[in-house]
Image 1: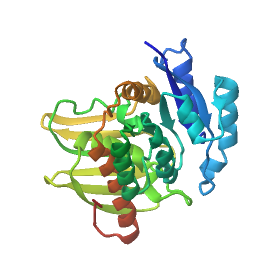
Image 2: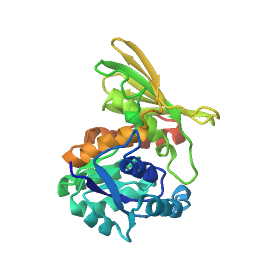
Image 3: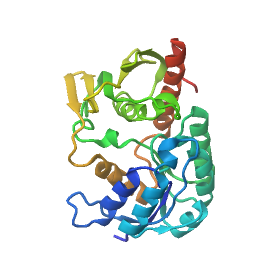
Length: 299
């Protein structure tokens, strides 16, 4: 199998060296075969501290530890590579960066969150269709052992996904870490959420979604010390399935296997409708947590 030349846009997240390591170290027991990160554009977001404060260190690491060629534009990376990992940690940058990448028609994995607004997510998918540029976006938690298999092959009546959910001053509300548990929730419930209501305290948010068929799915995002586990309780026709995300195999390795398959086929393992609705769910949650009201998902 010919090894894909993978480009990376946005060197401001720990995902960058984690992905490069799994793709390059053949002796690693969790090595993911089929591609290598060969070129990258550092990028960075001045409006987000966790981006601008980390670009330099990750750029140096990617160049010195993994031999990645650092280029001066998104275009240069796209021309050099077969497929793209759009890693920019600030989801508010993704639409503008994707507009550049879409000119090349190469498959693009957009790391979480896809965007920070439903309208921008919709624009990405419209441009994807117009330019025949395959798009896939997901949290690694969706594929984590201990969670991914819960309720497999069973009719799901409801689900509560849970995990840490910090709220940052310079990032849009629940989009920062809520995206992880939201991805797990929708992987169990599927699409069809019509409205969201949030109950919040300093310690936690409970985001309750009502689906068109009457099912209820909730996201419990907590901020208390000493608890960092992600997981879910899934209520199915055959009983209650509960689990927490396990560390082995690494979440990133499980996600990378899906990404490499996507790069080769051009087919996202998650439907566009579901990726879009996850963003709409989080956008509605941000409104509800400020107003205290039930919010209809933007369509």
